[in-house]
Structures are given as structure tokens and as C-alpha cells.
Length: 201
Image (tube, rainbow, N blue to C red):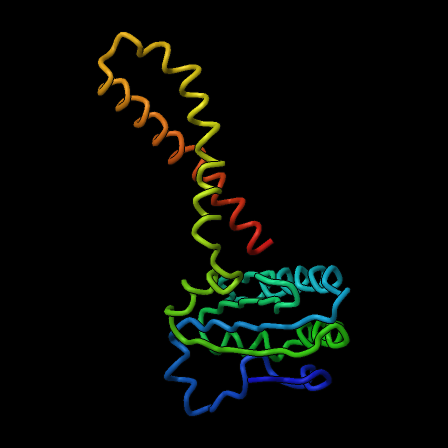
């Protein structure tokens, strides 16, 4: 669905429901993805507005979560992802005065908007991949080296001196195991949080 500026304040985020279909989909979670292309120079204003949307929608009963995905490339669309426990809960949000006021505030910032509704769980787990394009292989390798290198230096300076009396194979095994544990338990969670913040923050 493509909505042009000026039409968005009177349209629902997920399109018109066929009442006869509500019993069939009401028992399953509903995900609504709204992708908006923003007027150049209004990005900061939109991000402030999007944060307000997230705060408001989380107050509604049946809301399972909301995510804000920044563009993966210059001039790309922002995506706001709403997750509701069922279609009826989503309908309450879509008909709310809070939502109408918020849409009126954002209208002038938006060039165009695309809306997608998904019933079930399939799309929910792939939404994060839409936030930005996948990095080239050489960039991913370089980033891995940047994270591993400080740990390797630390192990060489602190742990290695205690292992000099061990055979080479065993010494290498202990060093590799120590690096793996640190990367998994300490560095990995930090890296994941930073990656998530960059995507959704």
C-alpha cells in the first residue's frame, strides 16, 4: 500500500479489515510495518516523533512491542514496527484519538509511506534484517578482527606468561579456549547491544 502525503491522516495503518475475516485472524498476533520516507533535514524531528509513537502505543492493551528501524542507507525509509496480540487490539489503537493526533503531527515531514500487515510470526523474526543492507564480507572480517584483537593482546600479556611451561599444543589450546570464552560471555553481549542500538536506536 502506498499512501501519498495528505492522505495518511485519514487512512488506517494496516488497511481496512473485512469484518467477516476478524474471527479468523483475531487469535493470532498481527505485525504492522510502516515505512516512511522523510523530507531531507527533518530526520531529527521525525525520530523525536517516532519515540513519542512508541511510548503511546506501548500503553495500549494487547501491544506486544514496537521497534523503530533507522534507514540502512541515505534517504532510505524509517520503519516503525507494531506488534499486537490480535487484530482487535490493533483496531483499538488504529481508532484511538492518540494515534490521530500523532499522525496529524507527522504529515508534513513525510514524502511517502508504505504499510504492510502480517498475521502470524513469520515476518516478525526477519524484520531486523530490513533495517540496513548486509555489510560486504571484507568489512565483516575487519570488524571481527577489531573486536578480537584487544582480547588476543590481553591474553598474550596476562595469561600467556603463566603457560610457558606447557607444551605448545596445550598452550595454544588454553589460549584459544580463553579467547573464545571471553568473546562469547563478555564481548558478544556488548557487541549485540551496540548492534541493536545502531539498528533500532
